[in-house]
Amino acid sequence: MFGKHELSAGFEYQKKFMNIGQPPAPAGAYSFDNTATSSTTFAGDGSDFASFLLGMGSTPGGESGNFTKDVFAAEASPYYAPFVQDNYHVTPKLTLNLGLRWDIFGGRTERHNRLEYFDPTAAYNVGGVSLVGGERFAGDGARSPFTTNLKDFAPRVSFSWQPKTSLVVRGGGGIYYGPSTDMVANPGLNDDGFGSSTTWNATQYNADGNTVLLNSLSNPFPNGVVQPTGSTLGLATNIGSGLNTVLHSPRTITTYNFNFGIEQQLGRNTVFNIGYVGSRGLFLPFGTVGLSLNQLPLQTIAQYGDRLCVTGDGNCEMVPNPLASILPATNPFAGAATVPLWFTLEPFPQFNDGGFNDGVSVNNLPIADSEYSSLQTKIERRMSNGFSMLATFTWGKLMTDDNQPPLSFVGYHSGSPQDWRNLELEHSVSAQDVKLQFNVQASYDLPIGKGRALNLAGVGNQLLGGWTLNGIAYLSDGVPIASPVGTGSPYFNQRVDLSCDPSTHAPHTANQWFDYSCFSQPASPLLPGTAPSFLSSVRTDGAHQLDTSIYKAFALGSDRSVRIEVASYNVTNSVQFGYPNVFWNPQAQQDPTVMAGFGRILSAANTPRQFQFGARFSF
Image (cartoon, rainbow, N blue to C red; front, side):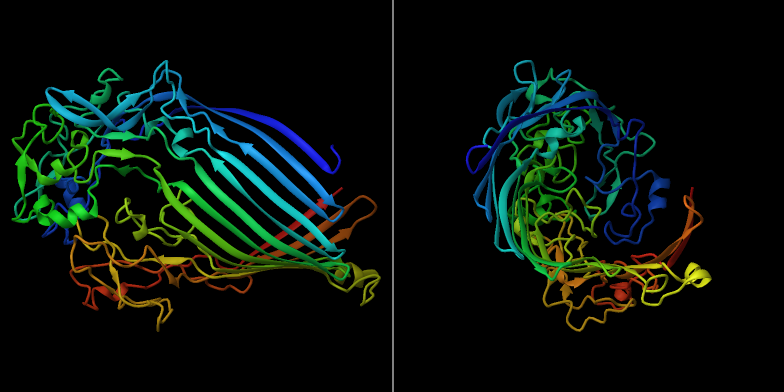
């Protein structure tokens, strides 16, 4: 304590351990779709079971990690944080809280140094071939594959002001940091060389654009499986088989939180709050899977188009194979005199394992962001005359460019981004956004019984007196619906075009929640669709539910009682419609018979009415 100042300081240290082995496919894992047995590869009229009987897998690049040799690791992640805080009591009615924290995330290590990171600028030579990009390994001199960011200073400031007895004004803001998820995660994210993964190169395209058998399921790896090499090959590790890796210096997840609110007392037992709450997230881990550094930019795809040998078009261009002499036998391009043009356009073709836009998968790239704003109100009545209540209302808006965040169990999520290098194409209202929410909880001791408004005694009081009624009502908007995907573009995850507001004149019935008239097939499979990831104006059915309960305790002497309770969830038996059917068929976008199921709802998002009866005997 120093005058009007209340000072505190401290230091926090943590070390988190993880011993884990999580083999994804140690005995082999294979998948089948309908492309191999369709009339044309993307017609959708084949049979996945027929493909299985033929032993034909999915399209080139559709298979990955079919057979794995995995690491069982022992990891540790240190954390350090000095901090200082000053609670400054400026006046009896005004207090300032000033603080500063220094977050230091030391980076993940593994007991036997079996971790690596990707260096995109490393230059080296293998068999006389000059290459750029490769993996660097942890060692005794640098045991973590991550650099330590020493610039994560987190200031916080807030205030509380009471201008009069019944009114309090509060506000504050601060910066908060968290470790990048790959810094505290499974070693499988970056243990290349010590584990291995072999991809089944099941099919290839022929001249007419159809897939044909390359390697049957009866012998999926005619050249053997990829063997672990440890760190002995250095930058040349996993040439020809792909990388699953991390970056050396990821940005630290950063969150700005800020709020301002007013609290007003209304009478003796009621308090009203209103406030603004906002948040800004930066350097968030993008999606739930790795992104390929070999994915061609959309500008490159638009420039070369059918010359990329992806569709089997006659314009397909084959070029001399610059890596023929160094690719292992397990790679489909090993020893080949020519390769597809796209192979040579990739920045790191030496790690391509046979698939278009494939080869260098970097996990949890810290490139996503979000912004949230909300107006929050609350009125609370403390117990008075047997009645208490809490009611809240929130208007909020959550925007993001990551349509598959780590907490993707909230909302309904669509597929991959059109171009992760240009996330402006993905920036839209979040799949987790709920714009309006209202919740009220109330409890009322019914005015019936001994000493109450309707005074009862004897048997009447035992049966009818002393009951308490409770209710919870919840109303909300739905979450946004994703724009249709699946336009048939083999080059990237292309969305449809959007020409009008799909909510205009939408029927909003279970048979057709909304229609497809505002959507259209993009003019070219080489250009991104104009529809946003999620449609703010078209949402699922919102929640509208009432839960109730009533209970009473019956005294059976001085130390015994029986409590009887009846509860009902969704007492009105209201139905909350589930997610509508959203699909796209580029061959029949104007055929009503094919598109008839678009927008149809076939399930409910909530449960029907339930009753629960209970009794408790206390003695």
